[in-house]
Every structure is written in structure tokens, then in C-alpha cells.
Length: 293
Image (cartoon, rainbow, N blue to C red; front, side):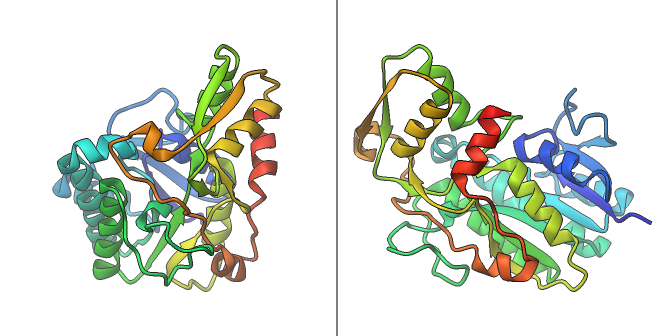
């Protein structure tokens, strides 16, 4: 008998890829705030608000999942900075509500977190045990979600990932490729370095994690391997997309955004690789698969 998996944010960029990746081996049910025509491609689907504690409790009790993958979040980094009340309600309280419901239902929780829990001040890739110090409301709201989960539920995986892009959501890759067809010069920051991560690869990694028969709960870093600045990333996108636009390197201060970003948010995936045996592809390989397929 297949294990039942409830995926929150199932009509989002990662959620849809997860539904597609897991549907052959698991009984998938999607949860999102509103019905979407693309939600998991006709898989069973429930509407619900993760910020409503009672609603979450009722839904999880009714579904009776073995596993909940909590993808739902407000990921607009600058939007979170300008509306911190909403950010903490969705990202922190939402995670708490899911964790409480999982505890009551006896379900394992997989929580998708972010590299933005770090301040970017290390010269080496961040490890799971490194001190967190978010620079933005978004990063802090996700970190508070992590803390709620660790306090409430023993049976959890916290997966920190970074710079997500995928077929089913607005993302940097598509934006640069589209602008590259029209604009002569694109201004992109060069003083922020991280690891772009393809949602399809992340979904595959989560599949490997769920397949482990002997769980080792805790925090894991999971991103495509390698690192790059936004500037060099944009150049690679334009090269693969065969666009003739030029990229001009600028600093973060020149961009003047509401939220601060870490200058270096590359994460060490060694712990995840050791546990699952799965090594995420290099970001260049992932980008090529995304753009050319």
C-alpha cells in the first residue's frame, strides 16, 4: 500500500514538480489556498489556508497523511520586507500550524527552508550547524518556521535550498531570457554568490529522501552543486538561450532593494549526500536541461 503524501503549495513552482515526481510511488494529495487548473495535473486537491490553525488541523486529520511536504510560503523577499506581518503569518505561523497538525496526525514533516537564514559572511559553504543570522524579514520568517517545527515535532526534515527556478513559476532564468531578446544591456548584481537550484532536481532529491527506510531527521542543505554570482549566472542564461544582449555588472547597493541579501549563501550538501547517496547535478547542467528541454 502506497504511503500518502500531502503537499502544501501544490500549485506552485516546486509543488507541481513534486506532485509529478512522487505520483508513481506515493498517494499524492495537494493543498493550496485556491483551486488552480494546473494543480498537480488533476491529482486529488484540497483548498485551505495554512495561516488558519483550525482549518489546517481539520484538513490534516481528514487526509491522514503519512508525510506532509510543506512548500507553501510567501517567497517575495522584498514584499516580505515591506509587509512583515504577512511574512510572519504565512511563513512562521503557517509552519507552526502544519507542525502541530502533523504531530496530532502522527505524520512526518518535510519543511522547505532557505539559504537566506544565513548572513553570507563565511568564506566557505554554510553547513547545517553554522550559526543562523538572517538579514531580511523573509529569511527570519523562514527561520522562525524552522524553530517552531523543531520545538513541536521530532519527526521532521528541514531542507534548506536556494535560488529556485522551474517551469511552473516566475523565476530569474525566464526573466533574463525574455529580457535578453529585447534589451541591449541588462544590469545584474555581481556581489551576491549562491547556488541556483532547479525545482525538478530538488523534487528528485526529496524523492530519494522519502525512500530512505531508516529516517535520520534534522536539517539538510539541498541545492544544485557549484556556485555562481547573479551576474555570471545571467551571462550563462543568455549564452544558452542564444540571446545577444550584454550584461553589465553592478553592486547590490546600486540596485537599492528593500531587503538585504547575503553576499555568499552557498551551502554544503555533504550531509544530504551521505544520508541519501544522491548528489545534486551541477547548476550549469541543470540550467542546460531546463533551457534546452
